[in-house]
Length: 237
Image 1 (spheres, rainbow, N blue to C red):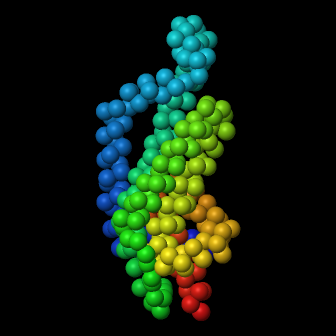
Image 2: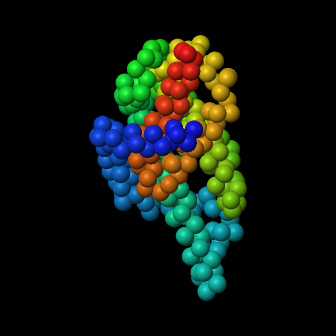
């Protein structure tokens, strides 16, 4: 598994992969710079409305000690905003990755797995539909867990856990459906449950690194693609 990560890093910094990653990076940075510059204050105001009542009262209190508490609440709001930007950036990057995943798989197959014959099912439309379905489930679970957001530590996991499952299910389907036929894909899922969670978790951690999350989706695609191609190769032996 760690050999997979090492080789994936090497491929990530190859000229072809750097060139492939440039457009998603530019789009992501330009989009979020625009959103935060023009709508940052409105977003913060919206976040203030969902604060617990006691926190809202503290913000409105002009007292000295209340102002100190208000400062910490404001800091928390900015951190919450940054956290949601990271999560939403990852979601956007995963959507863009749907279109370049076949290129990544073709690159890896040509370089490391020339003897593998790839079957696939669905296509980009199927991947987009699966992405949207997974996104709806993510929104539903985040809405259900939203009362937990303001509990220290618990709030972080209330967002990260459903988002991790969204990441795992979407990325794995996108890669797996480009390598296996449908029956092989479901067989692969049932036989490798633990290893799938392990490799998905390792790949997911890269997307939580601030700023690097703009770049990380291609690396994650390479990591998961190498893992699935390894399993495909073992299947053919």
